[in-house]
Amino acid sequence: MKQQSYQPLRFVYLLVALFAALLLIARPVMADEGTNSADAAYYKGQSAGEEAGKKAGKEATWTDLTPTVPTNPETPSDIGETTNKQLYKEGYKDGYKEGYNEGWKSQYPVLTPVKVIWDLISYWLQRLFPNNQSSTAAQSMS
Image (tube, rainbow, N blue to C red; front, side, top):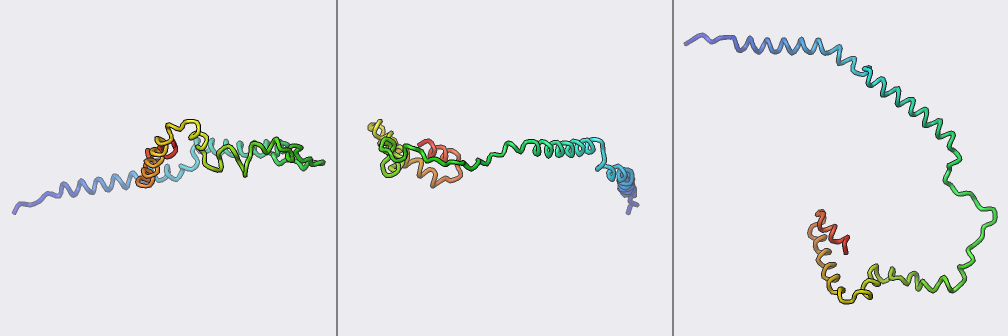
């Protein structure tokens, strides 16, 4: 039987030693990562920005969007009139209560069957493929 060489094993030991030396050399650099110049500039800008924001917020208290309480509350004068109520019947006359496209059906009576078929197709597409973009787009188009 022939004597085997230890050359591959020495190569593995050499690689392990180089890796250990690399870690020993890189460790002080890795420990110093938190204080490099880019991070220092970032945190300086962050603190300066927060201070500027707080200062600007204190100066802009007049922009409060809460409405003031009126001193003499007045109700609108046209509530009791019938001119305002002619547009509404049991809530809305413009087709909101019956359905959004009620006015569309009266304007285009020939296309009503097409719309009904399209609504059925898009409804079943959405039911069968709920996560499909085309089925949700088809439902929203009708």
